[in-house]
Length: 244
Image 1 (tube, rainbow, N blue to C red):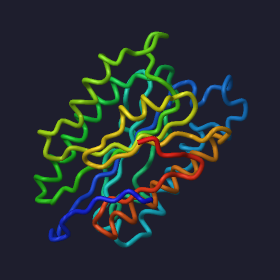
Image 2: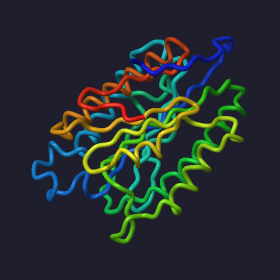
Image 3: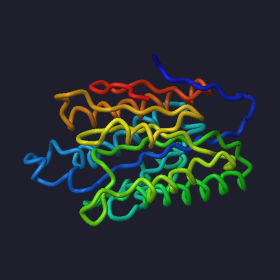
Image 4: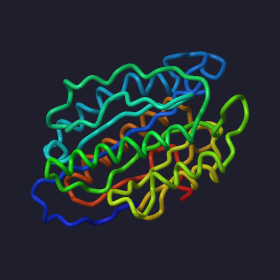
């Protein structure tokens, strides 16, 4: 069943931020896991995002409300495409090549997201925009790891908690999309339940390339249908199952 949450459609000058957050650690691109580079999650993401922006740009509802940003994380977290209004940004706003990193630092990316989303929503509010609750599509294929060791929950969970603090006016929803060796418990701890979020994990035997294409399709679907209806809409990508 689609995930939906309704919003007030009364505002005439709305802005809806969507963030695509990409794990670019070694397991997403290294030939040890992906002998054929063109089938690696990193390659699929790199070659799909421009088309994603163009597809969203063609939707008249999304052009009037949607704003999109791409963030990559590994040893650090980087804003690859700053939040831009679809009507003004696609397809002319460049989506720079995703970096290739090593580790999977969850604490770093949640800290970065908290800062970026607060700055972005403050800027939109100053522009007298009615800001709808940001949505984060969080794509990862492994457990948090730093220095060759599992990153302890007490390191990254407080940063995640700060991001979704209920006192934050524009508290984001998080959709956690897990490939590879990430486990259900981790995905469920990433995803939000209020506002409505979701956690999805890859079906056994699903290939990373097919999964990433399906995820990109669902992001396009979510942004365009949410913009058209005024309610957040999300469906489980093909090749995945809901765990939260």
